[in-house]
Length: 130
Image (cartoon, rainbow, N blue to C red; front, side):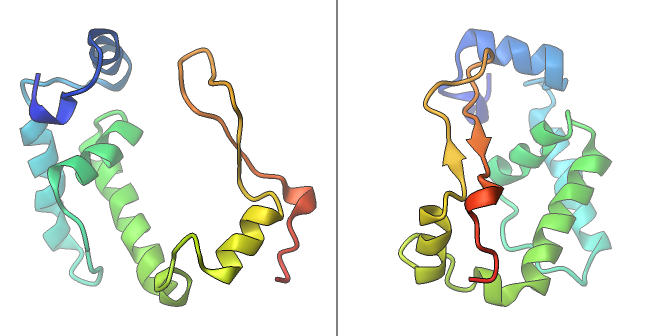
């Protein structure tokens, strides 16, 4: 187990191995392979390239490095193209407060059968003109 897996239960580590192809023996190499792809996109400002952050994208794409990099690049490219949306992205921002009051998003009290939190979007309550 690596420091990136610290705090995970043995069951979760096994689930990650089976379902996500996560292998603690090559975890750092997987992360480095994604990090090495960053130079192929000099047009994007990658604001975070630490191990824990890249690991999120690897897990989201079941440790397919090229797919994880594509998702990472799309994430930062979207942020770069929508600077006004993210420059003051704080919970006390009036726009964010309005969206939360409108019911965007909602989190169910109970988790799914895998123990994951369930996020809901109440589109009928959301006035996107605001």
